[in-house]
Image (cartoon, rainbow, N blue to C red; front, side, top):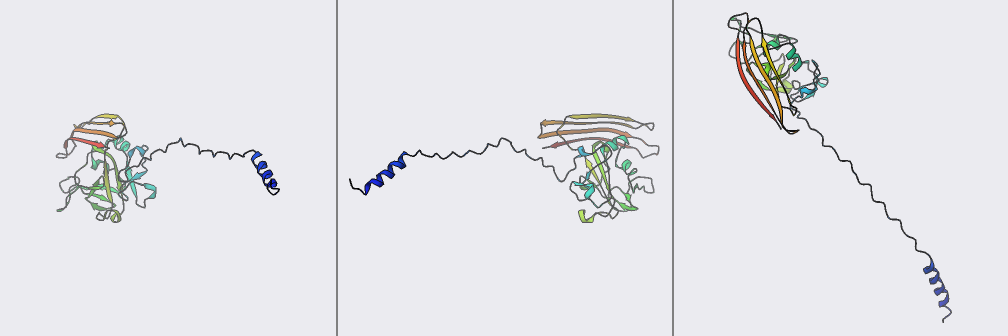
Length: 245
């Protein structure tokens, strides 16, 4: 054997005799078991009255036409919640105006409340001494007297709102929010009488058709309001339905 090959063979035998060093297997990352909950997105164009606590409201549409916290608005806004409207036993929009801050009902020469002077249409009331005839119903102009049987809340904004609405009266604006469907099952019925002969029968029923997805609400009224003045009575029969998806 060639003497030059002996050292090479001895080194090769030494290498093969060494134990093989194993590389530790990488630990797989822990499986994520937590699932992300989907965020509940509320409409910025409606106010959820469920956040109202008694007579106190935290948000309104009257400031910017979107659901905004009252604390973030520079306007002077007061809100009549559903509980306040029920406790005061208001019949319609004019009854509520009589209890509003810096607002008052206006009557014409015949004693008709809300009658507009001139050719303008609407219900005339004063806000901070300035006449207004354009009220809003869910953010849109409304020219009829709203009854409380289908009213969720009333917002009184006492300041010019031209920045938000473009064309309003200088004294302020009044937004009347109608009742909307929810995903809870609930209902109520009311019967009212007074010593002038008023009779009012109303029902309010909400039912979830598909839990968490589709709700329906039904409101109805049969009303004969009488007052101590002649020709001041008001009869009303109304039915309103609402769906929420």
